[in-house]
Amino acid sequence: MKKFLFLMTVVSALSFASDSPQDILEDRIEDQLKVKMSSVLKKADYDVTIVNNSMNIEVELEGLTVPKLNFDNVAKDILNCVDTNKSIDDIYIVIKHDATVGEDKILYSQYFNK
Image (cartoon, rainbow, N blue to C red):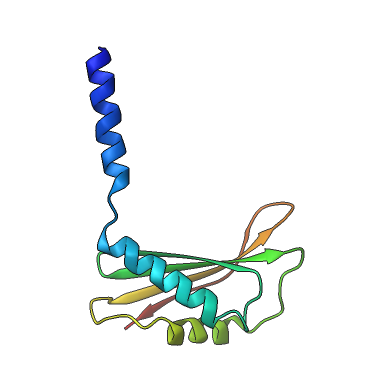
């Protein structure tokens, strides 16, 4: 039984250790969004996920109040910042308000087909 637990521990540790090329690309896009969108969105956290030629971008705006922005323009700015290769077919953007008290609130959600 101890050998089995040790083997499972080693297998799980190895599965978390490897980074796929998609993970590296996701991190680069997140960093690019943080830098390029810093003048438009203050205190924003970006999460990019790429699966099966689809990209999901989740933007969490932090703060006590919901910012008064035109989210259609913000989504267009995000699309302009994301310079992807031709393998991405569609992009889904979600903008949320991460309230310090209470639940998160979805402010904008849109699907874009390239």
